[in-house]
Amino acid sequence: MDPRMETTYRMIGGDGKEYGPISLEQMRLWVREGRIAAETSVQRGDGGGFQPASSFPELALGAPGPAPAAAPTSAPAAPAPLTGAPAADGPVLLASQVKSGASWFYWIAGLSVVNSVAALSGSGWGFVVGLGVTQIIDHIAHGMGSGAVGVAVALDILAAGLFALFGLFANKGHGWAFVVGMVLYAGDGLLLLLGSDWLGLGFHVFALFCIFNGYRALKRLRAAAQPGD
Image 1: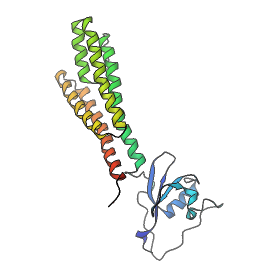
Image 2 (image 1 turned 90 degrees about the vertical axis):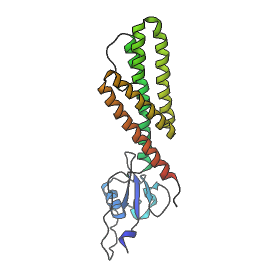
Image 3 (image 1 turned 45 degrees about the vertical axis):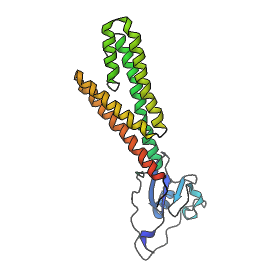
Image 4 (image 1 turned 135 degrees about the horizontal axis):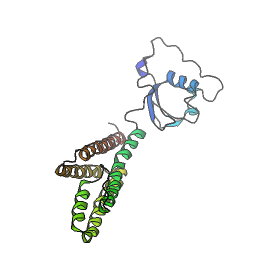
C-alpha cells in the first residue's frame, strides 16, 4: 500500500478549532490518550461530512480497551503532516478571524463616543483607537462654546454610527464593508498627522492590520466554499 494514499482525518477539538489532516495511527493514539471521545466530530478524507468519532469502526470507540494496533504494511508509514496543529484554512478558524476583524469597527465606534464625551466635558483623557475626525470636531466645538456642543455630538454620533454599521455588515460577511471601512479609517489616521499624534497613528495602523486579517480570512472562507474543479 502506497503510504501517500493513506486515509487521513480531520477533527474538531474541544477548543472549537479544526485539526488535521491526521493519520489513522495518530487518531488511534489520541483515542487511547483520551483526546478523542465518542462524540468528537471527525471527518474522513475519503469523503463525507463531520460525524461522531464513534461512527468510524477503525477508531474502535464502541469497544472497551485501547484501539487495536494498525496492521503492518510493506512500506513504512508516512509521517502525519500538521499533527496537533489547527488547520490554517479550517472554516471554524477562518470564521473566527472574520468576526475578530469585524469587531474592530465596533471598538472604533464605541471608543470614539467615549472620547467625545470626555473631550466635550473638559476631561483631558481619551483612547487612541478612536476616530481622529471626532477629535477635531470636539476640539473645534469646545472652542466655540456651548452652542456648538449639540452639533458636535450629532456629528460624533454620525461618524461613530457609520463605523458601527461597517462592523455589522462585515460581521455578516460583506467584503465591501471591510474595504470601505479600512479606506475611511486609513484616511482618518492621516488627520492625526495634523496634530503629530504618532501614538494614535500607530494604533490606527495596528487596527487596520487586524481588520485586514479579517478581510483576508473572509476571502479564504469564500474560496473554500466554492466547489472544486
